[in-house]
Length: 359
Image (cartoon, rainbow, N blue to C red; front, side, top):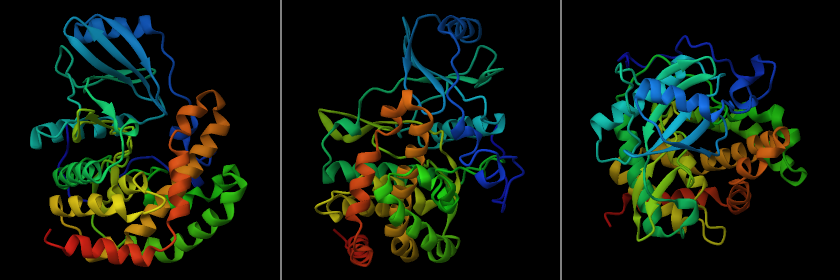
């Protein structure tokens, strides 16, 4: 169960930064997803959840996921990567349960308990969970509009406001995707396309000396960590209403503004960056008010997320070429976004004015 404790500087979870492991990206990003036969997974579902049906494989970066179609409906079967500590899987599971209790109208997956009431099944290949299937089309396949950007901002603001009081002993773990750890990307820079290396290397240097100290002073809480268009669903007939918020696998205790920066990094119109960033940020601010210091740091944090996406995906695609199309699905958008982030001071002014405006 979720343990309610004060936010501590570091929880005693043995997840080391990449500089302290043999692999520069850490084991969770270095190991491929598990590959348990469908028959074995089906047998576990039948034995522990009392369901039978057809399993359809789904693509995933770290886990082994399937859609389970049964006479009772469709569900998501998630087998966690065996490198993921049990405490971390429990953290994600308890966050889903907490959100369902405290914000039931947010479209997050519901955890289906086993026959004995437990929310997950430990196995030698990773923890197994069964979640509700959420309908809708990934936002990555829908037109990007100001209305959709505002819907994303409102949903994320409400989710972060809900999670602000959530506590778990495994929350404060090291995750390379977490923007606050951007400096740890340096060992992976050789994997980045040659034309991007100088800019990313220079930015990471500045992140260490200027951005990170300012970020350390900003509010911290549990965040979703990956509000990207592949993890958000909507009804194509009503695209400004989200029907699904997926993938809590990158949750961590970080800075609240990092969650907004992640979402913003996927909503940059190269010809006019503020066109979507303004409605996104304004909607978030109305749902979960930002401080002036958070807004001032947002452009740098967006850049940090873009650098993170381009660096990690390049490294993983080279390591797992058979999964490269999935791994690199966000790289073109991130590359275009990075090229468009040329005037952070003007963007700060625009975002601040938008949040201060009553309309």
